[in-house]
Image (cartoon, rainbow, N blue to C red; front, side, top):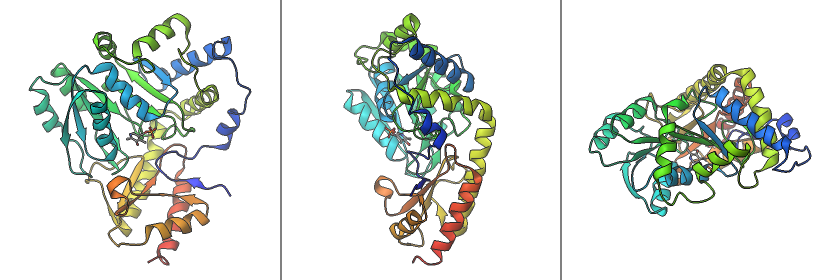
Length: 354
Ligand SMILES: *Cc1c(COP(=O)(O)O)cnc(C)c1O
């Protein structure tokens, strides 16, 4: 039986998208592949309304958490942490030998612009690493003000939009580096990650030493300019899927896509408040994933098991929130009708599960 995914990645992928990937493989230096990548490149800029550099890497999101730090930070970076993924990013910065400083918030809170501005005004940081949508806690930190604060202080804004880009309304022009993999709000299988890079960030990258090899933004850029190709072998089948999905996304439009996500978020968050409590700080709830505090202490595993028997999957909590919360994703190509069906099933199960 097919289990429909309401988990925050990988998300549910539609049958037509899966079918597209069964096309025969083409050579990665062929004219077809060159055309395919050029089309994807241009459509990404079109959908996200930007002239910023865009690149597609064969990697999961974590690859670009590392790659972004390697490319635009020589030494000093401020990592704002408010959950498990932002914490991981801080560890990645350290693992790459950067002089990373952590500004930690309690899990469930958003990152606050005043604190970041005060830090930036010391002039110490080359950049801020900010997680737009903390998938562990369901918290969204709006990025627009952070971009200005960074640029006022000669620093770059580097954003993990892994679980929100293509679902939430995000202006990629308000970030120097912003990235997301395919298996979250893009509703594609895992395996690719997309990054948008500002001119300032490209200029900075040229001056940074030890950018590494695989994720070198400058090498990717030069290769694209010269050949409209990617230096190493890309996951060809996933490029078919991304190309196809971008057409579907452009038909829907960013605004409508956001509205659909917002409607689903409202439904799940109302349900969460009626039955439990939301984990996120009020006013900062994510548009793509809701973390619900298990304040009734129900047996979450039993509920998930029962749901799975009905062909639906939700997530338990992430990291240290594993047993205290559970998460419902409303991202990608899911519809309000599907969310309604999920919530009705959860109501039924809740009346039985203690
Ligand atoms: C899922 C997730 C990641 C990790 O991405 P992978 O594709 O699993 O490597 C990083 N940051 C956030 C916010 C995420 O939701």
